[in-house]
Image (cartoon, rainbow, N blue to C red; front, side):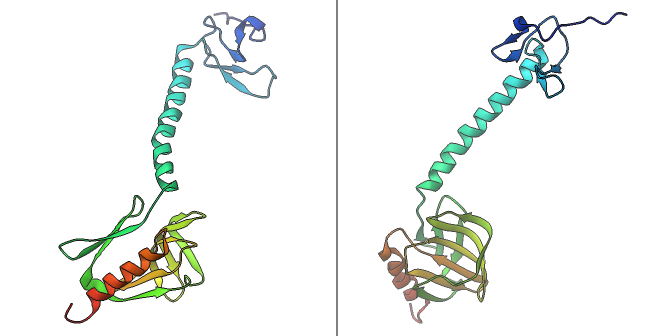
Length: 186
């Protein structure tokens, strides 16, 4: 059986910089710079389907990622005290909750502890969120805006939570609320 020869270097097969020859059944052909690359034959239905599927996947990923990335750009952190005594960190990323019974003490810090390491979280220029480890504190949940002191440090039975808000008063307000929960006869 004689193999058909295709002259893939002919200009008529290179539409808009891609190789397209429906008579050539090869999936890939050598690029115009011989030996430098392989290109898909857009005249081959399988190659065309694969390329369009990859484009569709890239568009789908972008459509899925963009809202999440935008939400992270305009993120805010808040605490919610539920009727059942649970305190919920209200944030779109790394949700966390604990009960008022788990709180050992609450304090306000002017600066964050030194030598913090992100173990699973977001370390953006404006804020930190997620799982971190700090020397002297161990594993912690962190929800702070980097330049917005004071920082609320909540010591729990099994770790720490650091918290601040975009405005300076948010951490102070929560300090008062949570400190009232930890005092005897509250």
